[in-house]
Amino acid sequence: MNRLRGTGVALVTPFTADQSVDFDSLKELLDHTAKGGVDYYVVLGTTGESATLSLEEKKQVLDFVRKNNSAGLPIVFGFGGNNTHQLIRDLAHYDFEGVDALLSVSPYYNKPSQEGIYRHFKALADESPVPVLLYNVPGRTGSCMSSSTTLELAKHRNIIGIKEASGDLDLCMRIARDKSKDFVLLSGDDMLTPAMIAMGAEGVISVLANGLPEEMSNMVNASLKHDFGTAQRYLYNFLGVNPLMYSESNPVGIKELLHQKGVCANTVRLPLADASETLRQRIAEELEAMNG
View 1 (tube, rainbow, N blue to C red):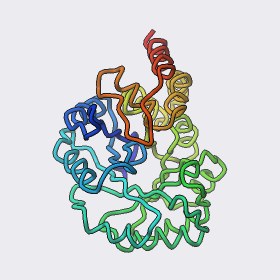
View 2: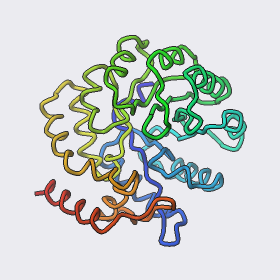
View 3: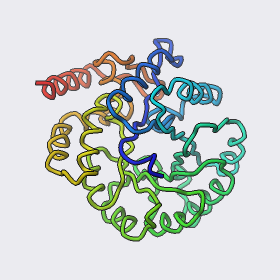
């Protein structure tokens, strides 16, 4: 799956002041990130506030990205849940033409065992009409997929890789060491990306790439060329702004950054709240420092 190599941008879903989907701003975001050099789009992941979009809105967003993908970039579609049978039934509601893979988060809230996680993903992959990219993010799900579970799932013909956002580099190294060459390991943490590429990852699915696509793409491309000196300079430049993306929960910070760059509004849906005045000021200061 070389099409998923490099920088994938975990797209935000822009909203208007009345909290409906802002398709004009979504088009602006698609163009902004493509011009910045990202390699593929990730639609309706966590950063896209998929948890608060209706089924019809999700279908509309996916269809809009397909139709407005002027750069012809690969598309990964966020498709996860903690009710396995319902998730499989929901496959029938979507047209997956033009979708390169599903990004599916490990089941949250239920806190399943490793065997339960394995059976969940196997059941989804057995039925999915497109390849499945696993997503391990214990900070949101309440459970961590072990390296052995990932490697066992990697044997499935329809499971092509994993977005690893556990922050556990030992776990990531075990996957990198023992996986087959065609199983894609991707960083799920912008700041760990050079380190993960050094150990065998092939890129990142990035939050910062929404607002700083050129800088993130340059860091990833330098890392893939093993030019870690250049990658380090970009990485250290992110040190101030990156924590602000999460201090009031993702995507509050990145939407505020995009607002300050004139790409889209900073509106989020409840239960998230728009960026506080303190956060807005801190992001403005960091952007000024980065540009100075």
